[in-house]
Figure 1 (tube, rainbow, N blue to C red):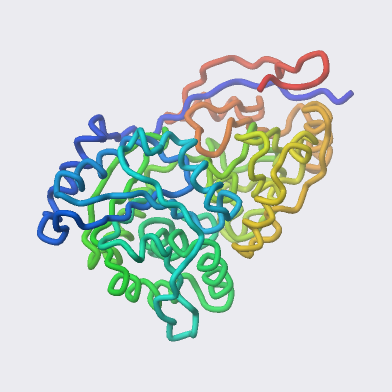
Figure 2: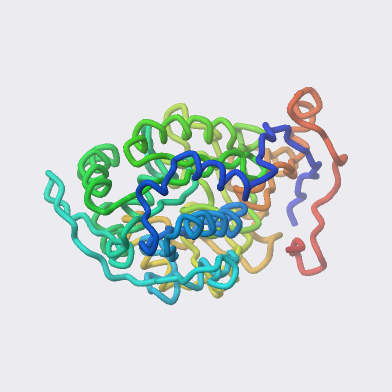
Length: 417
């Protein structure tokens, strides 16, 4: 039996900027745009809801719905998530309801469907798909979190414009755009398609959300449609500055408790694990540099396992529990095929960790640089192997919370979930 390293716990000191009055801020931001000059009494307004587990999502959507009702509008919700939720209307409805976004909670109907309207073709010949329910509405309010994308790099990544194109494109649109991106670029697709959607699909405003490193709402901003392309890059810079990160850049083994679509579009955020451009290692000056990743479970047993293909090792239970239909549908639509390819699997945590540590080079397992995290969204506190202890004690942005001790493995060889 291999002797495993001891672990200590650290707390990271991130920028904790956050909104205390989320509901009030949604009202203030939307009121600033004076949407009553465009939304007439009785007109319908489609409000987008995506597939991510955004902090305060139900509160944000409810506040937006209440504002639209005060203007005399008739809001309804549209799940806007491409091929997620198993690429079915029922699956997408269930997904947003799992976040507390229900008809009862927010006070308006949910209209979930996969049918789209092709509103035009780009100069590259790509058909521009748009959710039929949203297209038939008098207005569309685009709501989404702005953050670095897990695959694309540029001034605009994940946010309002991605929601408008890929989210509201449903499975057909998401598939077309992801195929087009392999031939052109995300930036070029944005230039070709975004302006067409903005003018043809009655986008009334955007509601952009930025979160801090503690998975809390840091900023909410209402944006006019003609300012999407200029304002979103500025919010992306803020989101990048506020996002969490691993406490150390060089890692022999990253042990991850859970992955899932509610955590990141790729199950675990590639910006956090340093694998944005290569599924199994950092490229160029990308950080962190993680040699091996071992995943213990899914955030939702029986859920989408997209992202498991970026790990080298996993617990066997993941392969038994995952919804492989949803996983394969997702990766075939996105074109990120490798994200669904199963890694080497083991029944127990001990066997998985011992095997992983035997592959990290000449370093002895007890001296290996190992980080243990809950997931890539929650990084305020991290378990670290003793190889990091000396550095941690001299870092102003780290606080050592617990002295080194053995991994809490049970008699079978598993960590507690």
